[in-house]
Image: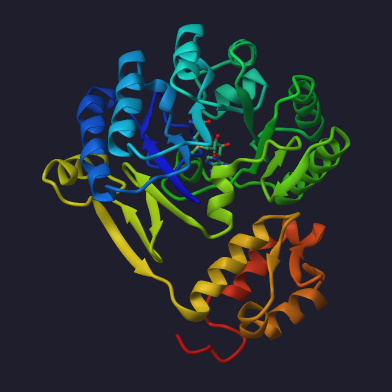
Length: 369
Ligand SMILES: C[S@@+](CC[C@H](N)C(=O)[O-])C[C@H]1O[C@@H](n2cnc3c(N)ncnc32)[C@H](O)[C@@H]1O
C-alpha cells in the first residue's frame, strides 16, 4: 500500500518544544506554497496512493478557500488515488463548525486534534494558543460531523504533576476518542525549551506513561505503537505504512518520501522549498538508498515500534542480527515468540537502547549488500 503525506508548515505560534518544519507569521506565502505542492506532485505522476495524511505544522491554519485548493491539487495530482483513510491535523483555535463541515465534505475521515494537555496554565506555558474549552468544543463538533478523532497528549511537561496528568487523561478518556497519541517531552536543539535549559524529568515521564498504558488498557484501547493507542479497528492505516517500512510519498517542506527503495527528504526551509518547486526542480535536500543489513536494521527498528504486532525474524532478519536478538532477549527488552520479536514493557521505555542494535557499528559481521 502506498501512502501520501502532505505537510502544511504554518502555525499561529510555534510551540516552545517544537522543532518540526513549522513557521509562524508566514501565512502570506500560503498561495505560493500550495502551488509549489502542485508542482511537486508532478514528480509522482502515475502513482495511486491509498492513504492521505495532511500534517504539520497546523493544517487547520489554512482558511476555507485554501483547504479547498489543497484538496483540489491533491485530486488533480493523483487522479488514480482512491483513499481508504484521510487524516487531517488540526489545532482547536483554528477549527470551527464551518471548517469541520468542509473537511467532512472533502472526505476527511480522521481528525487529529493537537491538545497536549487539558490544563490551561500548562497550555499557556508551552506556547499553545487554545484552552481546554476550545478543545472540548472542537471535539464535540468533529464528533457531531461523524469524524473519528485522535487526540495528541504530552507527558513530562515542565510543571506537570503525576496527579494532574492522571486527571487530564481521565478528562480525555471520558470523551472516548477513537485514537490517542501520547508523547514524552523531548527537548530538541533549536527550541525555546532548549534555550531555556528545560530538562525533562525522565522518571516522572515514565511513571506518567506507565499509568497511561494501564488506564488505556482498562478502557479497551490497544497499545499498538510505542506512542499510539486505538480502540479496536481505529489504528491509523497511514502511520502503519511507515512502521511496516512501506512506501510513501511526502509532499511539502521537510517532508520525507520512501519510494522504490529510496528515501528522500525535502528542504525544510520554507522559501527555498517554494523556490525550488517553482523552478521545476525536485525540492529535495537528501536522498539515500538503504541496502543489505542497513535496510534490515531499519525494518527491525520500525517494526519493533509496533508493540503488539512486532517484527518477523524469519529468514535474513533473524540471521543478520542473530547476536542482537539474543542480547535483547537476555536484557529483557525483547520477547521472541512464534517467529516474531516484540518489545517487552521494559523495552517500550528503553526502546532507544534496543534500537541501537540496529544501526552501525553492528554486533556482527555485516551481510553482503
Ligand atoms: C508535528 S506536531 C503537529 C500537530 C499540531 N499542529 C499540534 O501542534 O498539536 C505532532 C505532535 O507531535 C508531538 N510533539 C511535537 N514536538 C514534540 C516534542 N518536542 N516532544 C514530544 N512530543 C512532541 C505533539 O504531541 C504534537 O501534537
